Image (spheres, rainbow, N blue to C red):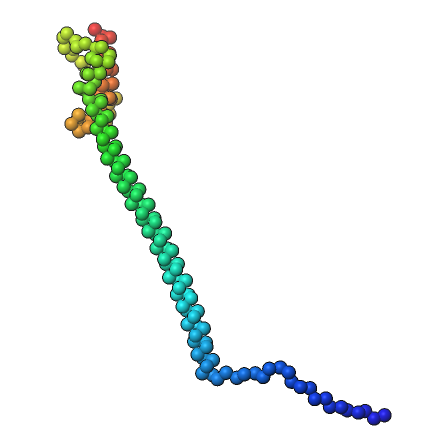
Length: 152
């Protein structure tokens, strides 16, 4: 028995490979790299724009807070002045005569302040002209006068 060999011719149906010249391939690579760098640059610039807008918003909030602090400081100065006026001797006298119905003493009274009362006022209080605290001085004088009245 003899083997028959047959040669079959198979047609090549795959598309032929197209060879791109080396110059054109380098140009395509250059375009790709340029496009990639451009995209990276645009991304960086967009990030910087967002960062700048966040920074500007923070600066705006900071300036608004500083303006509010300045307004509140002015209000605090006005309130301290009003407090000193309400605790001043003239206002206390008006409140005593008008609201409490107090009268002036017929004779002056000497008030003797004991050393323990002076020590209780440590540190020394500034004078009225330096913005002293009239309420604590009033309390000190009241304690001293009640101690004086008990000995009489």
